[in-house]
Amino acid sequence: MSVLVCFHAHPDDEVFTTGGVMRQAADAGHRVVVVTATDGALGEAPEGILIDGETLAERRRRELEESTSLLGAERVVLLHYADSGMAGTPENENPAAFCNVDVEEAAARLAAILVEESADVVTIYDPNGGYGHPDHVQVHHVGLRAAELAGVPHVYEAAVSRDHIRRLMAANPEWSENAQPPDLDTFGLPDSEITTVVDVTSAMGAKRAAMHAHATQIGDFGPFLQMPEEQLQAAFGQEWFRRRGAPAGLAESSLPL
Image (cartoon, rainbow, N blue to C red; front, side, top):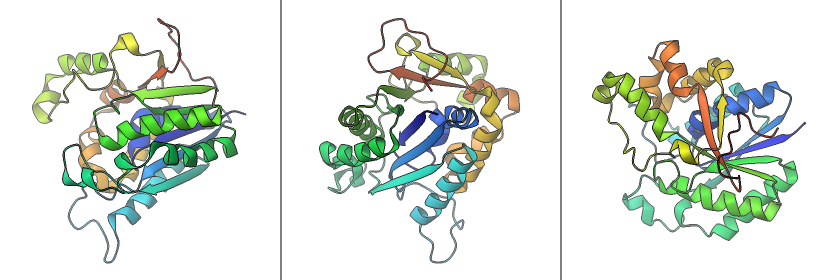
């Protein structure tokens, strides 16, 4: 049995880039652990969805527990750093926000978990955090340093293939009409930098159920939940990674579990 630790910024991030590999790893008998840096307290939620006295952070914790259970995680750890909010917002200036915490201090906390779990593989994000969110960028820095401190042998940067998104948008122009497309010059990584493409179509049922678990984040997941199964698999049936220290031209189809 190997141990996969997926380090994420907020509750719900685990679904998009690692949900499939988590479910497949669990189904293969490996131990899956999710570590989330913040409580996601600055996320948006539909009006009226919270019950009286309930905070968004409390609800998102329960959603995370349901989602990660569906995806096969045996342990979930929240580091409880403050959510930094989107880039350029006033919350970025909060000294306690995750984007501003000392990398060495946060990395030492994560490294302790990696050592305790004897992690074989850890996933983080690419240096731009996928799309520039301050918390995602900090996950990259903290995760990279923690893996170094803990001596984790395999470090993978979870990313989205921007070339794949371009191909999907070209084939489905209505997607660009119905949603604001990302800046694809900075979003994710080009195919030329991706080392590992994992087919996760066998896990799409669990991945879709995990999306539904994050009811407060329906603004993020809503357009995808309405997709026919074929379109959902086209969009999310692969997960992309860049392996740290990999030789140029590496083309893996799985993580070393």
